[in-house]
Amino acid sequence: MITVRVIGGIIALVGGFLVVLACLLDTVAILIGGNTLVAWIVNVIIGLWAVIGGILGIRKTRTGGGIALIAGLAALLCQALYYLNPSNAPYLYQYMPLEMWLVFAIPYITLEGIIMALGGIIILASKK
Image (cartoon, rainbow, N blue to C red; front, side):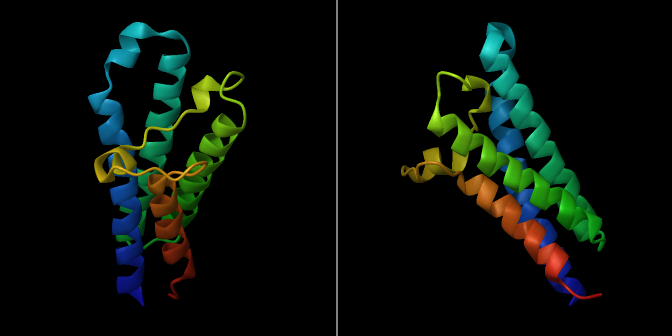
């Protein structure tokens, strides 16, 4: 069952890496500032949480699952709140490179958030 924890860590790591990669590709947000910069910072923090959780999951610790699950749920919550009222919370917009590359979008949720949360759940559910 320890290999299941490693698989969950890899899944969470991939989800976090996709978000961090999207942030690195959108460095123009730093120059623009305002709500765009805040959205960029929120995405970097969520992506780094998932990357850290994935690395800890690969190192076979259960705390990585909690961190990755929090990152995934934060990404899902931010995107849902953004879609409910984009004018009041533009800084909660989540970067979604997987949906842009696959050319379809699911409203109110992000695939990266689902991947991060799934990796966290797998890490937490694995037995010692």
